[in-house]
Picture (tube, rainbow, N blue to C red):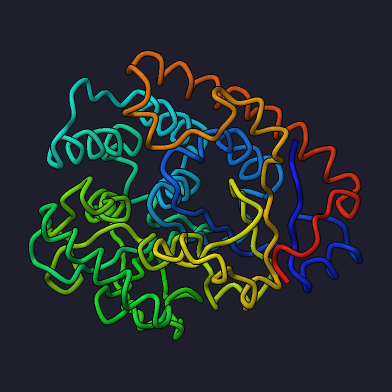
Amino acid sequence: MLQLVAGVEARRQIAQQGLTPKLFDKWIAASGGPKWLPLAALDRHLSQHFLSSTQPLTLMGTSSGAWRCAALCHPQVEAAHQRLQYHYIHQRYDAPPSQQEVAQQCRALLEAAFEPQSRAALVGHPHRRLNLIVCRGPFARGDKASMLTAAGLTALVNLLSRRAISLLWQRWVLHSGEAGPFTRMEDLPTYCAPLSGDSLIPALLASGSIPMVLPGETALPGVSSGRYFDGGITDYHLDLPALSQGGLTLYPHFYPSVTPGWFDKALPWRRASANLSKVVILAPTAEFVAQLPGGKLPDRTDFKRLPTEQRIQAWERASAHGELLVEAFERLREDPMRHLVVGKTD
């Protein structure tokens, strides 16, 4: 049901000490749209029953991964994460929606998950520091024609090198609390700005603003003027140099491997490993995925492929099936080395 993928240093520490909470000081969550739904129950279990609520933890996410991380920093984790899951599943687009309609629905679900009176406390959590990535786009406009041009240019420069993507897209790390390890990265030019209760919702919306699907965000306090989009453009699965610092990183992920940027998906030779020595990935097995509705993880094509009610039912079933991953984790925790998958992070 659940596989353990660990880097070289993570394997060494787990072999010596077991899969113990004290090893971890970071948590990351990737872009991937609704692929996170079967992991939702595992998120909550790890956050509340594996890790201590007073354990210092730095979280980093992009797109829907940023939304997950924000819920895990909420003063009432269980309720906030459940609300996020519910409203994410129950999005309704009964006709092909405009960018503005998708943005309105996403803003509404974020505002429902993170009620106004909780936002300052979330950003000011005494033990959990939220980080998320947004990408400043190359054009002032967010219409589909501009974004198609940007996508074509990005695909070309990304073939030259991963770093060349910064010619078009600026990586911005928005963070709560003091600057931490994710604000001091040099693999790509990295700009930073603090989060506040007032900027939380627009920041989360920007981090999930997929070009050509949403128009991007222009009203982000503390950042350079421009239009901001999905953090997964530069950091799809979070192959970040900060992961090699400090303690281990816990990574509940839908895949056992890591693709650095969104435009690397079509480049099979560009898979992450150098920064993953201290990373522990918990990913569902192929057998688990085969048991989900349609034999696959939920994804954005479901919006077009399935009628609304059928999609909602399928996503609810996928989320409920994820409860099995909680049981699988507790079994894995008893003898982690037996569940280890070698080679994905080396």
